[in-house]
Length: 304
Ligand SMILES: NC(=O)NCCC[C@H](N)C(=O)O
Figure 1: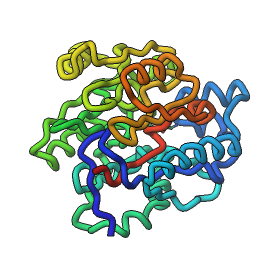
Figure 2: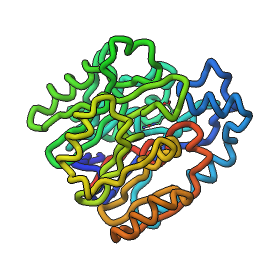
Figure 3: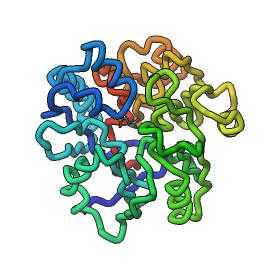
């Protein structure tokens, strides 16, 4: 049995699901892509190769092993993208919420059934089809649950809008003791620099009291101000539109001292080191072309 426990983003990690790039399949057709950055690379002929992505994920796996983290990988489905485990389910305290993910990605859940089977069934939460959420939009912070959403009336026109207000309400109902704060995010189906695909694409806490943030990722300045108040401006590392596009906010914490990041994120890595973090740098620029990075590739099951 796996005894789930996740209370925040940065406590010492003990067990995690890490996605896989094996049998990712050939470059998708334009109509098969579901984010603007993948579309951009399909058009330009620069979509990442399976071999390059496997090597990047192996580098990530090595760092997790170095820190004695128990790593579960999804069963491989032929020619199917299974890199971004984050979105398919998420742990809050000792419960796992199975996402109602984009229909194009639904089979990804089958591949981790063997993990779900090791969890007490009374700890597994599922929602009806009209309730949408993906794990990239859900973040724990002290007694808070932060949730990225899109409040526009044209929600259904955005393949990049993955968590609806029914999803926010569902989490509120299931976790009445938490402060659930939703954030209205900017969305674009066509321009990755104007698209905060999930909350973790424009914001993420690091360490005990700091966070990485892209102000313009929030449609409503009040939402941004909420985080400034909570963390204090001096504790926020602001990233530019281009840095959001490179996925600077999608690094991954193994503990409140150790952070895995992309080796080319020089400005961020320097800041993190100056703050006293141990920064584990790995190559992940090919996977970044699919509008996801390190946090997106993981689903923590146990943090101390
Ligand atoms: N949490 C995340 O931001 N996950 C990245 C998912 C990227 C994938 N191309 C998608 O559009 O679903």
